[in-house]
Image (cartoon, rainbow, N blue to C red; front, side, top):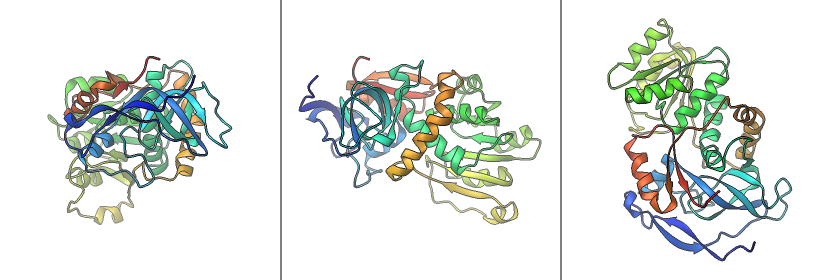
Length: 334
């Protein structure tokens, strides 16, 4: 089927609130060497999309200026030098932006097959979340069997994935949530305990759960006053991994426990990483995580699906934090 010269995509203009998002025509992106062009079926909505839309997260210089970091669909064209994929393959991909559209390009190393047994919609919920959790929980956090882990934001797409992945690795998993419904959802995907931070002091409750030992690993997307509390909660040789800041990144903390408990405080973002690094993560996911997805031991948690035209509503829901799991955009029928 011939590729059209134009397509529908979401634009955000100069930026602002969710209401600035609108469908507009734009050219189908040009395909570079080592890339594939994907006809998009679904795209995931992620908090970095919201921050970029607001004007506070400019994309890297070599990335698309358009929103959308993960998609699923079928390969429409393969670029020069691409050997692993062919036209018609059902895939999901971590993109370099531009996923909120009918077509998007992706480096071949950031493309993965749709896991057997999953739909294209489910597959679109995988890349950004699973790349991020693997890179930070497994690689940066050095997750090991028997670890006790605390995951903040347990009911987010990242949180629900991290809970499942940590349990698959043989960890004991605690998480923080904002209400009883979210706590129940987290326990349903494997959390050993879900702490309602609005009703409980998560430091006291985590220490109680751990028998005053503390935890080996914390995955945090909150920042602000959580940072010092996290450091307090870490056991000897514990690791704190920062993946986002919903609260300020500038805080005053006592660093002495990092020395006395031999702690590691690290963090990362996904988007600025090199194509080679992302490709290496993709291969690890295909080797270690895709079989678990195909066995049903891990599953994406999808909360709500919006048509592409309702991207503004999808962003408003994301920013309300009322969702449990992933928010998706349906671009074309599967």
